[in-house]
Image 1 (cartoon, rainbow, N blue to C red):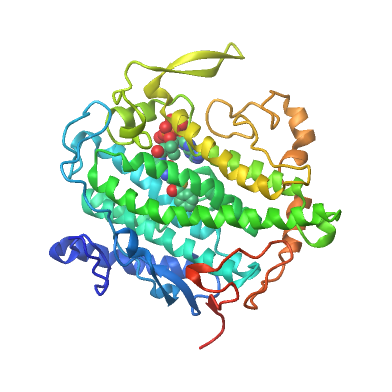
Image 2: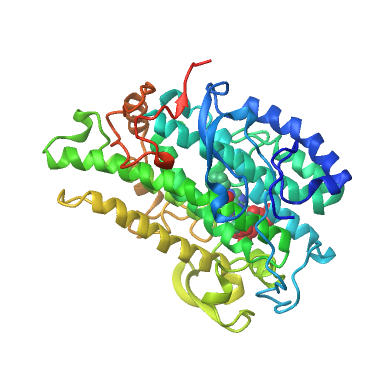
Length: 471
Ligand code: BYC
C-alpha cells in the first residue's frame, strides 16, 4: 500500500491497479490533463530538461529525488500520506467517532464543493503563471517556477483522484470541469477571486507564492483535520509540497528586498540602479495580501460553521492547540457593523471559524514580513502588512472603503489616493520594463534581485538548472 508505484502509467501509492474501474476513469482523464497542460501550462521550455524533484515515496526522505525532466513527462500521480491507525474525528458533532473512509451521504454535496474549490485553485495558479518564463531573472528562479507549476499540477491530480474515487458520475464531471474553467476568462472563470488575477511579472509571482500559497497552507491544514480520511491524507501530503512554494515566494522577496536595501544603504535611488523601490514593493504587497485575505471567506460564515459542525474542515492542529473540540459554547469577539458603525460583538465560535483561520494566517504572514524587514536593517525603511479591512472584496468589509491603516474613508478619498496604496498603471509599466528580458546565463541574475545564498539540492548557484535549447 505505502510504496509508490512509479513505473505505472499513473504513479500512485493507492494500489490503483487493484481497482480497474477507477484506473480506467483516471486513465481517461489523464490525456485531458496533458492536453490542458500543453495548452495552459508554462509557455516555452516544455521541451527543455528541467532539474526537478519528483515524489518517489511519501515519507520525509522520499522527496530527495532530483533529476532532469521534460515537464510534460513529469511523474504526476496520486500520493496520500500514510493512514493514522484508529484515527478518530477530531472536532464537531461527530467528535470521537471513527473517521470516514467513504463519503457520508448527508455530507456529500458539501464535501464535493470543498474539494472542487480546493482543486480549482491548482490549475488556476499554473494558468496565471504561464508567461513568466519569458522574463525570468535567472535559471535558478526559472527552475523554481517550474517546480511550483508541476506540483500544482500534482495537487490537481490529488483532488481529481478524490472526485473520481468517491463521487461517482458527478465527481467525474467535476474533475473534467476543473480542466475547463480558465483563470481570468469572464465566460468560465476560476472559482475564487485571487485566482482570476494575472500574474505577469515576477514581483507578483513572489508575492503570490508568499501570500496566496500561504492561504493554501492554512486551508490544507484545516482540511487535513477532516473526518473524511482520504481528504485528510491527501492534504497532509500536499502540505509537504506547499512548504517549498512558500520558500520560493518568501526567499524570492527577501532577495528583491536585499537588492533594494543595498541601494538604499549606498545612498542610491533603487529605480535608478535597476532595482525595485520600496513603495512599489509595498503596493504589490498590499494588493496580494488583501486578495489572499479574501480567500478565507466571510468573517461570520454559516458555511464555515456547517463545515466545522459536520467534521469536514477543522482548525489547524486541532488536537494540540484546542481543548474544546465541539466549539459550541465559546465566542469570538469581533468588530461587526451595526447601524453603520463597527462595534465589538461576541460571535458564536463555529460561525467565526474563517476568522480563526485568518488569525493564524496573519500571524504567519507577520513572521515572513519580519524576515524581509531584517534585510532592510540600517536603511530606516520597513514593509508593513496593511489592515485586514483594506481593499477587501469578500466579507464584512467589502463595499466599504479603508486606508491601509484600517481607518474608514470615503469612496472619493479612496479613488483619489488609490495609486498611493495599490500598484498604479505606471508602477506596473515600470515593473514590466525592469523585467523585460529573461536572464538565461547560468549564475547570472537580473539587476533587481540578489543571488540566493545557496543552490537547489546542494548544487552550485551557477548550475544549469534548465538545459535551455539543448537537445
Ligand atoms: N472569491 O461564507 P463565505 C491554494 C464565496 S489556496 C470568490 O464567505 P466560506 C493554492 C463562497 O464560495 C486554498 N468567492 O465563505 C494557493 C460562498 O459561495 P456560495 C484553496 C468567494 O464558504 C496558491 C460565498 O462567497 N482552498 O490551495 O465560509 C496556489 C460566501 O461564502 C471567496 C480552499 O479555499 C473568494 N475569495 O469560505 C495554488 C479550501 N470567498 O457557497 C493553490 C476550500 C468566499 O454562496 N474552500 N467566496 O456559492 C473553502 O473552505 C471555502 O470555500 C472558502 C470560503 C474558505 C474559500
